Amino acid sequence: MPHQHTPAPADVFSWIDDAERAREQAGLVRTLRPRPAHSPLLDLASNDYLGLSRHPETVRGAREAAERWGAGATGSRLVTGTTELHAELERELAAFCGFEAALVLSSGYAANLAAVTALSDRGTLVASDAGNHASIVDGCRLSRADTAVVPHCDPEAARKTLAAHRGRALLVTDSVFSVDGDAAPLAAHAEACRAEGAALLVDDAHGLGVLGEGGRGALHAAGLAGSPGVVATLTLSKSLGSQGGAVLGPAKVIRHLVNTARTFIFDTGLAPAATGAALAALRLLQREPERADRARAVAAELYGRLTASGLTAARPDAAVVSVRAPSASAALRWAADCREAGLSVGCFRPPSVPDGISRLRLTARADLTGDEISRAVETILGTAPAGATDR
Image (cartoon, rainbow, N blue to C red):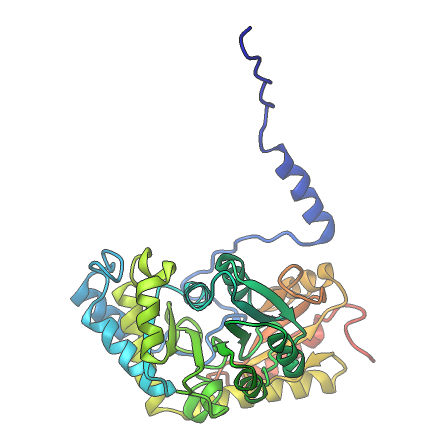
C-alpha cells in the first residue's frame, strides 16, 4: 500500500503569526529604521564614543584603502583576504593595547565566537558572567564546553566555580557591560584565574578608546595587558568608528586561532575600507588621547544631571549611561518621544537585558558640546513617562 503523506498546512509559517502577536502584546516588536546620510537628530544612540566615524581622517582612511585595495577583501584571510593593510592594523592594535599579537576579523561578534570556541572544547569549563554579550553566550554554545553562568561581577563566585573543575578552564567577561555601562572587576578576576590555573578572556568592546591611558582599554587600565594568561577581544565599530573586530593576546594564541577559529578561517576578510578607516582612527586616537577623558566626563555629566532630576540611572564606568524605564512599552514610547523632539537614544528591552528591566541607553560621545548635553538632558526629562522619576 503506498505511503500516505499528511497534507502540508496551507501556511507552514503560521506559527510566526502567533509569535508576532505575542511580541506586540509584550511591547517587544523590533523594526528597522533606515537613517538618512545626514540626520537632524542629536545622536546619543550609536556607539561612536569618540565621534570618529565621520572624522575626515577616518573617512579618508576608508577612501584611500578602497581605492588602493578594492571594494572587498575578495576572499578569506587565509586565501586572498589578507592585505598589507590588515597586517599593519594588527601590529598597531597590539602595540597600542599592550599585547604581543592581534588578529583582525570581520566583526566583534565573529571575534568573540572565534576566541571562545578556539580556546575551549568538550571537557573545558567556561565560566561566563551572567551579564555577558550575546556573542559570548553564542560562543559558549558553539564551543561544546561545559558552561557555567556565574553571578554578575562576582570574582569570588567565579573562583569557586573554577576551583570545582578539574581540567582546562576559561573565565570570560565583558570589560564594560553594554546594558548598564558598569565595569567588570578585572584585577580580581585575573587573581581568581591565576589561583585556579584558568585563562581569562575579556571582551573590551566598550573599553577600547574610553578606558586606560589614552584609551588603551580596560585591560591596560587594570595592568593586565600582555599577561600570558589573558586574551582580549574588541570591536573596531565603536570608539574607532569603523567596522570589524579583533582578538589580542600571546602570539601562540593568535597562531592557534589562525588554524582553528572557524569564524576566521571560513569568513571573508574585513573589507579594505573598514581596515583603513580603523587604522586611521587608531592613529588619530594616539595623537589625541584626551578624547578618552572627554567621553568619560560627558558620561559623568549626563548621569549627574539626570539623577539629580529624579531619574534612576546606573553610575557609568565608561561611556554608557543607562536610564531605567517603568516598562518595556514605556521605554519604547519614551525613545519615540525623544526622537520626535530631535534626540536619538537607545532603547533596551527584553530579551536584550538580562534582568528584564527596560532602559534608555545613552552614548556619551566625546564630541558632544555643552549645549548638546543640556539639550539632551532637557529632552529626556521633558519626555519622561509617569513612574520614571522618584519625584
